[in-house]
Each structure stands twice: as C-alpha cells, then as structure tokens.
Image (cartoon, rainbow, N blue to C red):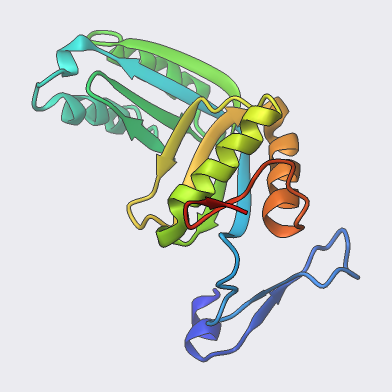
Length: 197
C-alpha cells in the first residue's frame, strides 16, 4: 500500500489513533539517516518451537524432512533460526492447536521438540551498515532491564532484526528501546561506528 506513494515521491504520515495530536512518523524516500533504527514492531502471543536432533549434524535432507512435516500439517513459520543441531521457529497465534500438536508428534519421530507459549516477536527495522551498533545497544538495554532473548534472527535483507522474548516483557522492551533509540533517553551507552557515545 505504501509503495505507490514512495515511487511517486509522496510522503506518508503515520499517526497514532490513540494519540491523534502527536506528530506521528513521516515515511519518505529520504528517511532519517542519523537514526540507527527506523521502526520497532511487535507481534504478541506467539509460540516458539525448538527442534533439536543430533541427526542434523552434518546430515543432508534433515531440513527438508522437518519442513515437509510443517507442510503436511499446514503449519506456517514466521521467524526462523538454526544451528548445527537445532532449529527454532515461531508459530503465529492463528495456527490451529490441533495442527501444532500433530506437527509436534510427527517431528518427535526424529527430534526433541519443545513448545514455549506466551512469547512475542520484537522486530527492529535498521540500516544494514549499522547492525552491529544496533545489536550492541539493544543487548546492553535488555541486559540492564532483565529482558531475556530466547531467539534472534536477522532477515536475509539484513534490514530487520527480530528478537523472541516472553510476552510479559514485550511492553517494557519496547518502551526501553523506544526511549533509547528515538527519544534520546538511553540508560546504557549507545554504540555508533564502534564507539561509545
């Protein structure tokens, strides 16, 4: 919906319906290059699924088998992270509980599966060239406020970085990051170009 306006160089102002007198955010082709982060979004009430198997180590076809079970059970993945012996994925709240349980049973034939409910995805839209500075600032903020990251993923475009945290910590995480990254009220050192500012 925004692309036609951006292609025609028409700025779009996004307002807060709960606070219409606030100036809102201006989205245009120029952006604000002085900001490390241009947006914070979240998705609440998601499920984190951890799939672990030593069969994965050095094996081919393992990911194919895992995602074949996802397809068979009609369960879609939102955010994904993987290592040598594990895959972590988030499942949207719109997924049917019965489908998730069938998927869990199928995956249990060759992997250990853990479900962690009441999680949230916090996503930052950032400049790829500043992602290390963003991560340093975010993790310092989370550490200071006891916000535990259970999974992290950076999109292939390197523009978005997602953190999976407990649902009961999402509001605090958003408020602390917004204060730090947008309001200049950071209670940790901000890292820019590898230097503390």
